[in-house]
Amino acid sequence: MKTTLFFLFAFVFLKVTAQQTVTGYVLDANTKEPLIGTSVFYDGTTIGVVTNTKGYFSISTEKNSTAPLVISYFGYKNKIISAVGKKDLGTIYLQEEVEQLNEVVLEPDTWSREKKLRIFRNQFLGTTLPAQKCKILNEDDIRLYYSKKEDVLYAYVNKPIIVVNKFLGYKLSYYLQDFEVRYKTNVNGFRLTGSVFYAGTALFTEINKKVKRKYVKNREITYLGSTLHFMRALSAKRLTEENFRIFKESLEVNPYDYYKVEKIEDGSAKVVQSLERLNILYNRWSNSFVVVTQNPFYIDAYGNHSPVDVVLFGGDMGLLRIANTLPLNYESVK
Image 1 (cartoon, rainbow, N blue to C red):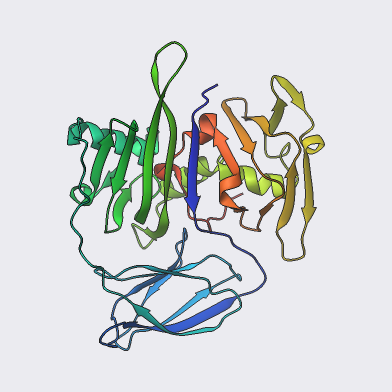
Image 2 (cartoon, rainbow, N blue to C red):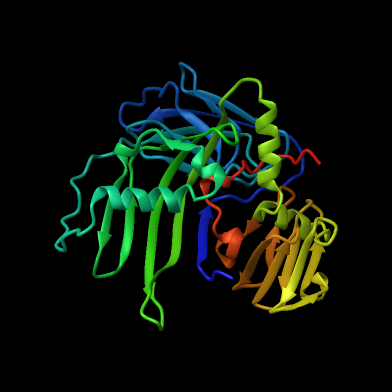
């Protein structure tokens, strides 16, 4: 079983109670003029709108959500706002993004851009079949730097990375905030990928107005056995019914001997994993493991866990990247 851990921080936590509508105005912080066409969206979902000629927006969700709203306008700094319990956000001011010179790098970068870009694609999109159907439309906007001293590859971008996923039928706008690939050398002297970390906010939009049948099929295939599927099954205490088998090392165990799940009134669940690491087998073919560094953690009615950084996946689940990511409001056809 592969031991590379994958860390993905999406600043998201959803809570279900009832439909909600949030309104507000987006203005330039200096001129106080309305910013027309500003994107306003719930992070990691397909739920988004743009401001009108007065800078006004009204965004609705079918369920109450504690996911942050992302306010984004080209040439301005993004704002991430919590709209929990609010109906009117009033006036939101965006500051212009000041173009800064690249940081002075005393250590020369010894890797070619072609090599760095190939690694970035593999670690950001993944190497699965869906990844082969993905294309980044603005690769020239991505700045890459390899530090030989730290043995880390970094990526920076001041525009959203636009990805067209022709396997799932989505166009993804990803606002990258951090990206690192850290390498390590094992006891045998072989250099390996130690960990991958990236963080940001994302908006999904449909490629086609009418979703093609192949996309519906591919989305369900991608969902089954995913971390989102696992979390939803865990919260509902349906791991066995959903074809997830849990192992303590190589010994299969009753999942709920090691998971204590307590339902909360708002539809979320409080979870305690009593052993730091448990192995997961899905449908006899997908081998993964989950490491929990802090208890308890919470799973909302959408299947999103919080805090996001205390649950780490490795193995097959840990290898999944943006190309295999579904919107957080995706509903299984089952």
